[in-house]
Image 1 (cartoon, helix red, strand yellow):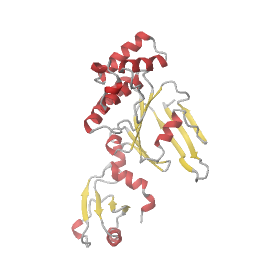
Image 2 (cartoon, one colour):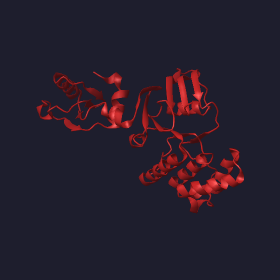
Image 3 (cartoon, rainbow, N blue to C red):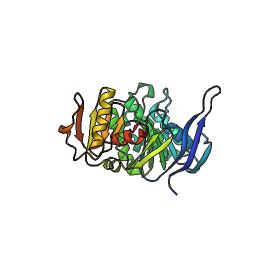
Image 4 (cartoon, rainbow, N blue to C red):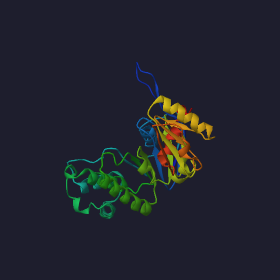
Length: 297
């Protein structure tokens, strides 16, 4: 059985006097022994899905096959789940005790994780005195104390600077290898999704694409053309020009993305005042096209 298996989940939020909001709409996902990124903006359904997996939200329909219980499941929230007045060591010891780990084993796990996460010299400091980056690493240690089979990361680097984010992910990479766990990451950051083995692109409660970052990019060809427009007239003219070349344009706000643009001669563009670039596709290009089907012209 996979570490994570959910099928046809539907979650509807109902508030008196307000229209119903569908948070998940027929959502299915399966994952095992990998890092899978849920990529989408705020409101796409990422946190709702994690709530269903963690059994804090009951779906209106659908099935959570695994995990069948909270055993073997840990979560790193957007805000560290640590007692600010306790020391890092005390927080980790409490986490171990809550999971029924013998005291001697807790101490050995605290030592190993604090060393791996480079917080050994901060174990006896109150959490309130830690920087944001150190608090995040301490919170990751808290989640890893029970050696989970499934780890949920809900926007885990929110508010961290570049160096702290880099340090967090480097530590995460090492620990994943050691523990061999499945990791489900919710993020709206393209560079974080790039770190995953697979990416599930989410829009309006649906999974619109799922594959490795490389395959999602490669689906757009070796090169894409990006046309930066300003006025509605430029947009219409650019769309017509692209179609005249036999290519398929995708409009994303003021930008037009054209996949498989290897053979397009941008010098032949007859429209003045626009910017044109040809470059390898990015995961952001793939996400924009997959989640903006309604804007295709």
